[in-house]
Amino acid sequence: MLARFLPRPFEPALGPLSDRELTVLRCHRLDERLLAPVGTMRVPRDLLRTPGARARIVSTVVPDGGVIAMDTAVWVHLDGQAPAAIHVAHPARRGRNRTVVFSRALIPPEEVELVGGVPCSTLARAVVDVARTAPPVRAVDAMIRARDAGLDRNRLALALMTCRGASQRGGPRARRIIEAIVPEHRARE
Image 1 (cartoon, helix red, strand yellow):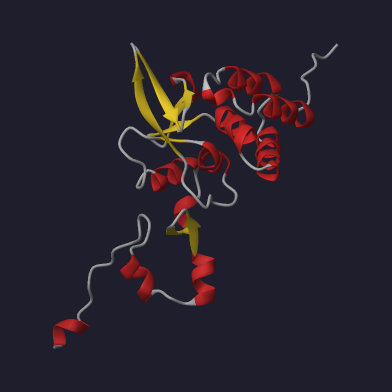
Image 2 (tube, one colour):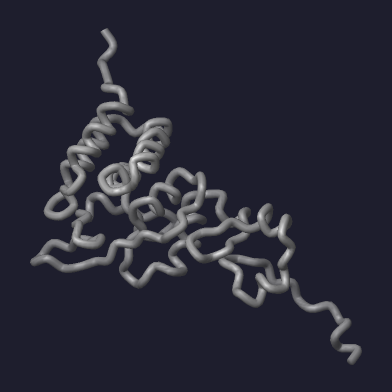
């Protein structure tokens, strides 16, 4: 009986909290301040401070060989409100070239980078994919955030040009959003 009162080793939360831990910590207002919803997970907010940390948290639900994509990749790169769903691209082999497949869209290897050791689509590709397929408000918001982060029109246009096959769907809409939001770079005279 006395053993229950002895101090136990402290184990910090280093990832998403389990259902058991969440039941112990239930406190309506405190939960909202301490925990952030990431997909269906509840994660301590202090574990989401850097892009690498956000990518590692998401990697706990990404299947082997998967690549973080779309809204989730934009969140990993730029922070903001966590996505309600985790978007993942799955690898596939096409001849000798290794490509990554999201739904029926192909993401070429040059549009994938490691963030915190986790494969993630580049910010430009993620923003272009959101602009192509997401509802207009989310598409414009992602484009504004990317512009504010320093992405220029040329880099976004290049990412849009790498869209092949089914991933060309929504290309004209994405091009119009890019032209409306991201200013054209002009050389200084």
